Image 1: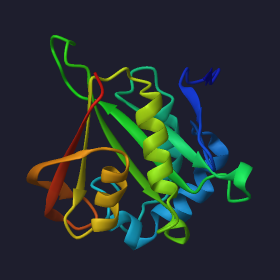
Image 2: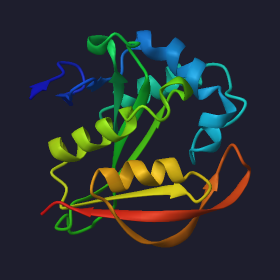
Image 3: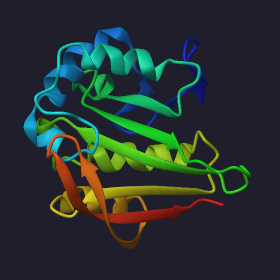
Image 4: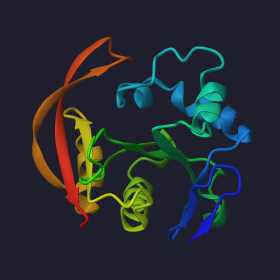
Length: 184
């Protein structure tokens, strides 16, 4: 697995996609896809409408030395798709003792790529690469998004329970399903 010179993050290759660190040229496609209300409503963090400059700030943050989350573009160039068809991210979860080594995986794909298996492929590749060397990965999806739940079960995640999470685009708390994947 090769490392990106700038971010130090690995570049992860799967069958149809490459997971690579974000670059400034991704801003236009991130803005295009993240501005879609369907994408924003499936995430906790994306506002809708998307304020100007959000994608550029997101990209800068993804390269910050003190970042708690590593972000990769789902790049489909090798398979004749766009250079950015989605995002996958790993956030380090707080652990004072650093023994549990836990990460939370988040992802979204462009609506044109829904139901193509690309999200499952990207999440599975991230789990297999396990760049944070996590012992456990967690994920959550909104209960009105069963397709994202299938992405997780396809990658070997197990249902853990119901919870709630605040969604910026929805302006409120939304019921979620929580998933877990033990890696060590």
